[in-house]
Image 1 (cartoon, rainbow, N blue to C red):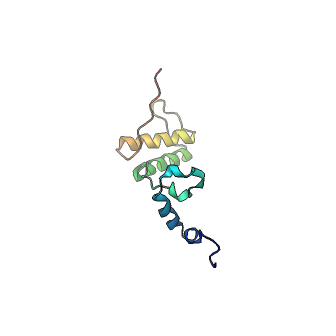
Image 2: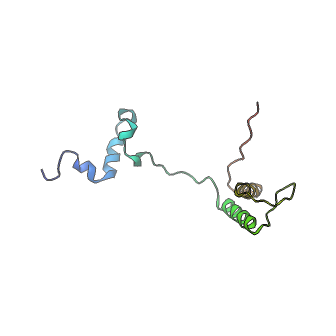
Image 3: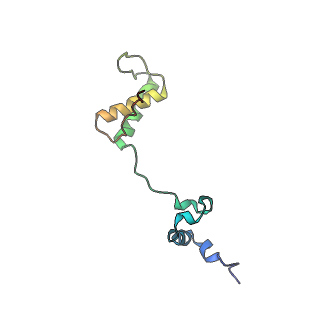
Length: 106
């Protein structure tokens, strides 16, 4: 045999391997034996372009020292706080941003 065994036709082209496995129920194989490409999926973007721009401007303002927090008007020093301010500005303008996580009530 030139190919070196029984499974060489499937080993040469990963698309054939995945096509073969799609016909078989996923429960038939342990997850560790399935090819990784089978679990990769295209996902929609969580944040829109406008949201990205708002966060970028907030970060630049923070670096310059001109970014102020809402009520108190204090200078923002935290990177996370600057990102949160940028996202909330984007939300107000109607950009594609996931809703703010609410705190759990006990």
